[in-house]
Image (cartoon, rainbow, N blue to C red; front, side, top):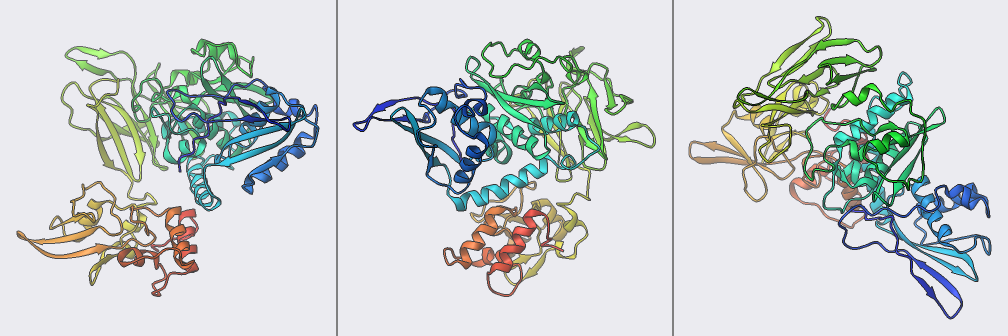
Length: 563
């Protein structure tokens, strides 16, 4: 799903014989930059309350959009036609209903000087949105892990952690084709509008008041957040280093230059414009300590930790205690060094890991120091600049300078055999591959080629896709892939992999899989071979609602297909 809702509208006044007026909103087909709607109202509630009960109207509009109604009627002869009335409608959608990402445009009509109705267009069908919503909820759940419902965290801490996690997750979209919260959270790429809408949705989940801010002069949008009733600017897009350079960012690198700033402060941070639709004035956080960190703040056991680059220190947020000195230098070749500290910090949910120029360290809380867990082979000019954690692995990003280039390479280190996506591989009986006739069963989703090969034949086998291409060791196994057993120079036998729940054969279990099953038992789709076996999780030789519900429950985290 690619939603291309663009909040910049070309107004066309069409005078009809009936003396009615249609204000037509269009999305440009080709874009070269972020197109942000011209916010001439600022506060749609204040505008509409001059004429109608805004809360009732907002509720009715939301219900109509959730029901995919194509026409929304304005109260008769109540709201005078004006550009402000038109823009107020879209301000309302953007401020109050950014979760309705599938609303893609509208034509607002008037008659005899009053607004009459809005004709709405949608970028997806109700069935598609059902799938998208489950996927979106899952993506938000991952970002909010440990944050949502955690009363030990202050609103400032929640704002900070969500800011950093979103910046790490999402990459700026230089194709300018991804615009909304869904794109930012699920596809992990978007322009500024998607960053801002995603941050807004996430803050709604944790109960923090927020709204969008925009500037036509900057062609840009970001967020206004409220702490103790006071507004502050937050711009996740400009704090993500993938913005501005036209290339992928360093793993784990997050700026905090545009976090909780006053209007004066954010203008100093290069938001040089004077047409903001909101102008917070409180300067409490304009020079706060987090501006000394360009690594993500991480949460572990209800404590937040971060790297203070200016001090070269690993610090605990709650009391400012320095846990370890991690000062280091990053070589530029010979006797030259890059100015700055480029250490990064991640957690696997049980431990803290940080990188220095030539190694990755795990912080030992009992001993109060870091312990080297990995040291890659470097060529004398290379250093570690990026660090991330994913599915039991620490990933090092190695480069010859802090400026990302095509010469970057990545190394993976297994640090957590207890990662939940690997539990079934490590301890569950079903994790071990069972060769059953022509099929290889018992492989869980999110299992790599190397993990399967290590468990079976210690290198006397290869795994290939449906086209016969041998898969790299770090690729995910998928339903339909084939394990080929080799005896000398000849093929001994082949087995087609079946991964329960992976109906569409992409190696993971997601909303597409259970929606495909729904189509099967409704008679709209058919499955054969390994894909049919992957769908029949109850092993009763039929595809029915039980299979659908079990796969859906697995995706939502309430059922284990592999236990």
